Length: 193
Image (cartoon, rainbow, N blue to C red; front, side, top):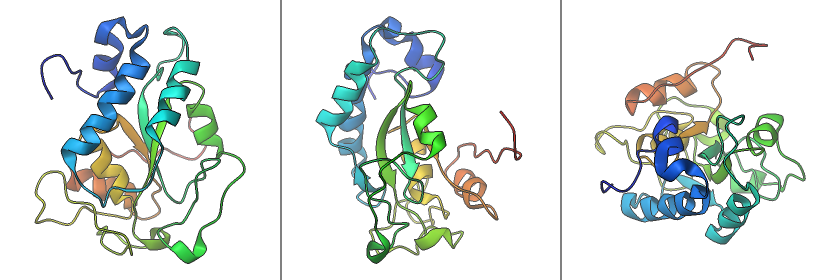
């Protein structure tokens, strides 16, 4: 990224140009970063650029009461986003959800969904290479596995395409892939707010 491009951490993004009208600009930077990273294994379903720009425009002026205002994020493709197929990395399993998962719905009040990310099929695996889609490349060393099952979410975040990503974690799927890509994975306690 060049000096005029913000780092994709949330604090830097909120400081970028006052954030007042940054969402459309930021969305364009996200798509430029996708091209720069050039890893076809990260995403299963990339939201159309025009759709993201339209969602960004709907956000209006910066709202400091919304700490995730305008922030780009990714969603593991076993979590529902209305209008985008959910596959769990199994094309034969694909269905079109009519509504967002609760966490996605709440995040979309301020943040912008960029993509549905690749994973170990049905979220069963810890190495991130059990997918019929191209395998995401480890963000630190492409000779290493990306870690799973939330591999695409980790790589999208570690490569600076999004500021954070949703994953799932039963036995380490979120934390292992985070560790392998030099980012932080958080598995909150049940009921934590």
